[in-house]
Structure formats: C-alpha cells, structure tokens
Image 1 (cartoon, helix red, strand yellow):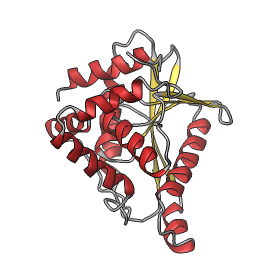
Image 2 (cartoon, one colour; image 1 turned 180 degrees about the vertical axis):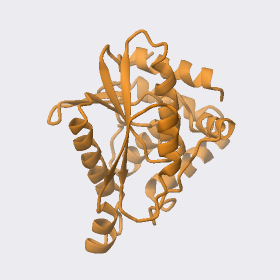
Image 3 (cartoon, rainbow, N blue to C red; image 1 turned 135 degrees about the vertical axis):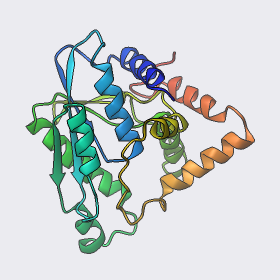
Image 4 (spheres, one colour; image 1 turned 90 degrees about the vertical axis):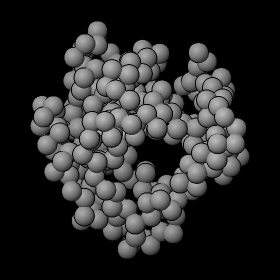
Length: 239
C-alpha cells in the first residue's frame, strides 16, 4: 500500500466519524509495532493538508521488560519533528512476577491504557489515537461473540468522561494486509514485542480463525465488518 492510499483511507475515517477538530493536540500511542508506526505516518502527513489544523505527539508505554529498543522510534519522531515521550512502568513485573497472571492480556491492556491516558493529559493533549485497524474491529467482535456472548466491537470514536479525553481510531478502514504492505514498502522501524505471551493469546486464536473463515468463504471479513457497521453498536453507523 502506498502512502497516498493510507492517507485516503485515514481521511475517510476521520471525516466519517468527525475524529479531528481545529486546534486538536492528538497523542499517538506508539507500541513500536507496525500498526502504531503506520498510524504515526498517516497522521504526520495528514496534518499537512487536512482542512482542520491539528498537532501530534508520540507516546510509548514501556512495560518494563528491559528489552524494548525504542531508538528507531525516537529517530522516526525526530525525522517528523514530533515530540516523543516514553512512560516507564513496572506493568510487566506486576503481571508476571507479583501477580503471576495466567491470562494477563485484559489487565495489561487496562494498565497500559491507564498509564497512557494519564501521560496524555499531562502533555495537554485532548485526544489520543489508537492504531486499531479493520481486522482488529472484526477480531474484537468475534472475541466478544465467542467469549462474552454478545455482539460488540470498540467504537471509532469515544469520549472518556472521567478523563475528559477523546479516543479516536483513524485506521478502522485499513486492513492488516495493507498495513503489512505499507510496512514493507516504507521499511518501518518495527520494534520486536517483548511480551512473553505474544502470539499465544485468545486474540491470536481469533486472528487465525478469521483467516480461515476468509479462506473458506471469500469476502467473509468484508461482510463481518459491514455487520459491525450496521449493528447499531454505540458509536458505529451504517454507511
């Protein structure tokens, strides 16, 4: 995928769900993975021509495993003249040593988001952008259906009233395959995920299940995405 297409899909999402307003200071959550780096590219170049003026800052929550090399991310942010902040935490130690969690993903996500949102507010940002893409929408819906017994997925835009903070997801129209293509074409400086359970989670199982469903039923992923749009889940609208 070329940058032009990424910007087109990002702008479509931003326009459809009124994600960006004049004067916004948007924090970009950067894990160091392909998705968050693609989001950084998208918003950095979108702000050059988008009719509503906004600024961005990059934030990484370091879980404290001790083996996360963020120098490539720092270099990219310097190249884009984007302020970059690393939040140091002991989340990894708490999950795997103190609590010895057998299924740490849900608690980890809550703790990461808590640390991220707190820093976002400290930096004076009024919005935070997450790098969830189209496949994440579908996989979250299937996770909810299989393990919670309800039809649900996260909203493209949502307001956190306790934090007085908006969460936006500008990549919801971009597929994971397109992000992989973008990563390869532009040689994104992806950092290896240091989490010891990476690739061994329920989400990874659902990711493989989704690929199997698509392989056996061509167009299944598109139909599942449209089902989320048409579901009247809070924050979504049929297009």
